[in-house]
Length: 353
Ligand SMILES: [Mn+2]
Image (cartoon, rainbow, N blue to C red; front, side, top):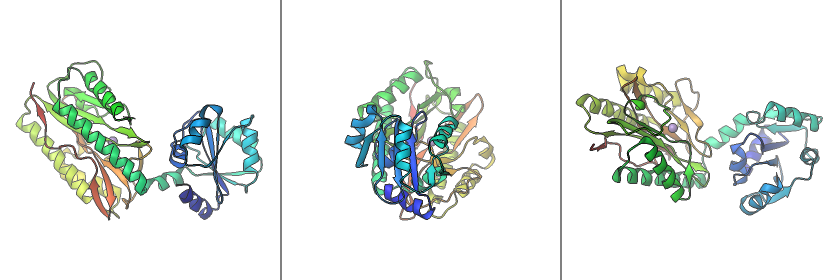
């Protein structure tokens, strides 16, 4: 990761980059340093070794788990210490301006005189889009665990409320030594018509039940949605489910290296026909150290699907105050072709009520 960043810094003629997690957390710090620590600065010069500056609080953890060899504790005041390091390098400093707060940026500018600040937010996002072999291994593991949890959920289904399912998901994720990659969405009956419904202590109702969750294992995140049915679906409900499933499968098959992300949205709209307007969100997003990364699959996206990308494909259709259906898998582009990493059943699972 560090080498990749350094190559980009040289190409862009940036003398050194500072990546920091202070008040706002920058996932790039965990990505580059290999450990999720706060209150730390990582200084990456365009050549030579990077240095990680941490607070007392994070020092031992950083030393033990980070792939950065040169880990030091701040001398106070921290800004002066950082300025001393930065002054060894040229004037062009890369900063992630989408993470630094206005106050932090003002503080940095005041402390480091004679520097020019180049925003590296986009460059870091682009770099993270292509996953390395090690990252793919971790993402596959997260997907495998997600499948196991879903399998257990369906097989031992004896939940009374949405909250029961939320609790189950949390317990299972922790049982695997992982955490949840986001607050899961468990939406039963009418609630399923709201893509970002926040569940609670309400009884599960008959009808569609959308379960959208993922795990964060070793810093890498999965994201999967299945919509199952409690009770007996009507013929029309079954049909809607199968229309959506066919659209999802077609979009996955179309996801080849070199394809524009927006083409996949067109593909889903074609498959959904008159129901296309019922899809009220984007088609998918990259996953990695964050739950939303590049590529972004929406109609205006300029992103191209490429080798090593890992992203979701998650079409949904929503009928206000009635029901919604969403099916989401995680896809890896390997040898130019789509490889589905989540393997949970996709035919409509029904549970007797
Ligand atoms: Mn998603």
